[in-house]
Amino acid sequence: MEAKDGSMGFDFTGIYDKIVDKELISYRMSDGRKVDIEFSQSEMK
Image (tube, rainbow, N blue to C red):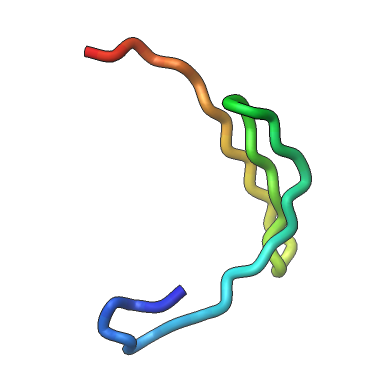
């Protein structure tokens, strides 16, 4: 990842642990942090 102006950047790496279609994405970043993203339905207004 890098700033738009190129002033700063870093590598973003990780390993996907679990993917459940339309429900969950779970992964571990290279520094050991764990990320869980849960999806839910909502009414369109």
